[in-house]
Length: 92
Image 1 (cartoon, rainbow, N blue to C red):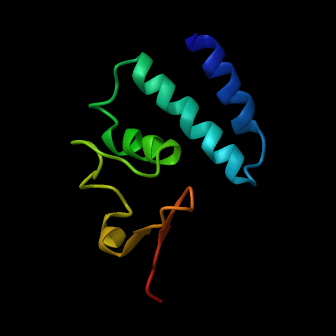
Image 2 (cartoon, rainbow, N blue to C red):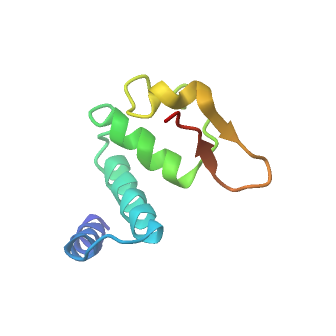
Image 3 (cartoon, rainbow, N blue to C red):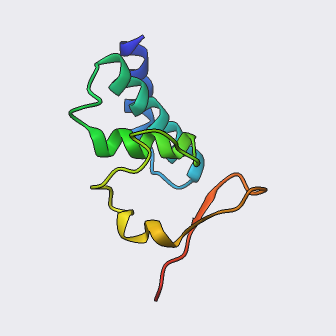
């Protein structure tokens, strides 16, 4: 399974990244590798963001990564119940 994931990731990363679909695919595949390699403790920020891409409403102890780059905006993050995404309000 790992060689297949690595092959798919390598092929995707050779292409220019120009869509949300590509980013989601790459992050989900990275998350699979993190899990297969038991690297969650070593790559906590990456694991958090990979999880967030697939699950915009996170819960549990790992739901709010304290060192994530979006942490300064966490109080301003709005979750709309009918929209399958989270929208961060960023002050100009």
